[in-house]
Each structure stands twice: as structure tokens, then as C-alpha cells.
Image (cartoon, rainbow, N blue to C red; front, top):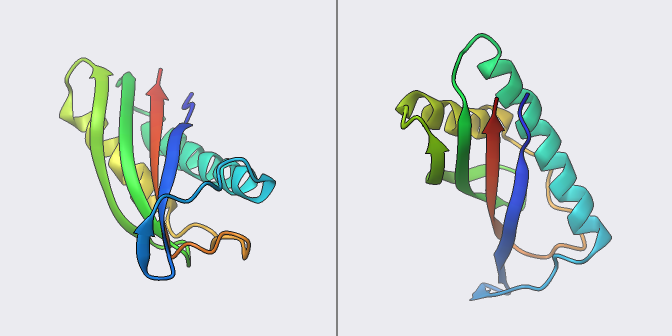
Length: 120
């Protein structure tokens, strides 16, 4: 079972200037995070169904306002050191994209997220 957890989400671009946007407490933002969690979790669960891999992988990824993926990278892990698990986690985010476009109330051009995927 995969348990994706968004551990931080911040940094937006507003009016073409890079500034920190405090949107984390809005209901629209929280709903958007939940949709990301759900989609990544379903894909990761499907990809890992027949593997014996386990551990926690933390990824950082950037989404554009249309929901498309800009980049994804591994920023931390707690596992047997198996690179396959890291690649599987990155693949889960890639296959889960594109995500829904940002809600209209999130006026950022892009947002950065960090998510931890726990594989058991």
C-alpha cells in the first residue's frame, strides 16, 4: 500500500516575479493537494503491486498552472538503497501527470511540491 504525503508545498511565481505565496491554508489549495495525493498514490500502488520493494522516497516536483509536470527529482529516501525504488517513485509522478489545472484562486504560474511515498 502506498501512502503519499505532501510534506511541503510552496514557491509560486506571481506576476512574473518569484516570490513565496502563502496559499497553503486555502480550501482550494488543500483540495488540490488531495487530488495530487490520490492520483500519485493510485499510480504508485499500481506500479509497485508486483514488486518486493519497500521504503520511503521523498520527491520534489514542479507543476505548471495547467497541471503539466516541469520536473521531478529524488530529494531523500529511507530504503535498502535500491535505486529501483527511487526510479519507481519518480515514474509514479511522471505517469500521474498531467494533473488537474490549478484552481482559478491559485494565481501562480507554477508550484513546487515535496511528496513522500511510503512503499510497504
